[in-house]
Amino acid sequence: MLTENKEPLYSQLSCYVQPKSSRNQVVGVYDNMLKIALTAPPVDGEANKMLVKFIASQLKISKSSCTLVQGETSRRKVVRIDGLSADDVKKRLCSNVELVKN
Image (cartoon, rainbow, N blue to C red; front, side, top):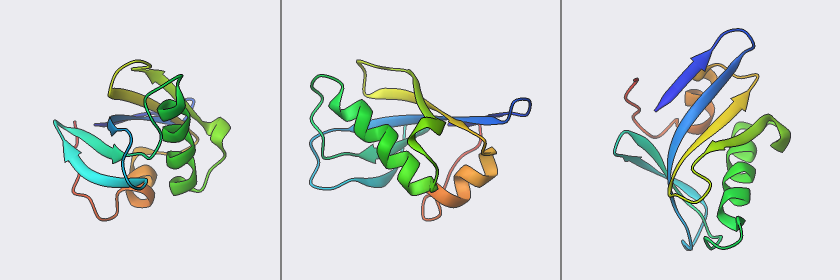
């Protein structure tokens, strides 16, 4: 679900996205991925943009530090988070969600 690279420092977060939800929120763990509900529809990359914006806001980092690296047309996505360790991501994003380390 969450992997880390030391040099340069970045983490990769596997997500399962549920578009067109009533609000943006971390829902829990689904199929060993972090399940995130988003209000944006899955049209013209809107949900992808909202995912990057939501993760950046939850981690309190700039949007440019988050990049969608896999899953552009799928609900299963991988987001690269520059400058944060896997532990930092867990603490900031998933404080109420139990994560299973890969």
